[in-house]
Image (cartoon, rainbow, N blue to C red; front, side, top):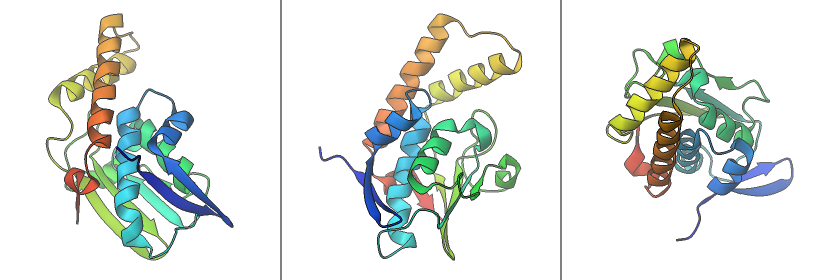
Length: 180
């Protein structure tokens, strides 16, 4: 299988970024979110720009909020939206939007902009397995109550994250998201 890549300009340099490159930046924890963001960028860049897009001209909104660390790292690495003050993570904004509820509140709803263009999209229902959602909710509950998950639960959640990421990466973006 040919590895997909995002092509972006940074000043005069053209950079090719793969999902593996994003994992080198993000790490191996929230890899499902990193995979979602990668697919969002693959899907929306051609709709936002007829040429190779330039870092610093993007905006990005995630309905998952601060909990989406994989998403945040991926969009920062590629688009530099955090660096340029164009990253919005207000979960309340997504309350009345379409998209499944995320385990830590918010929704799987996103907006990506480039100059004066904006694409709004949400994750199709059924992409995120219920077992993943249940273990993620457990992790959020444990964090809120300042208690540790069992080693077995941590291992299971990591395994579910890896399965989710693999599934997302193997799926075409148009089969993952609905553009509004």
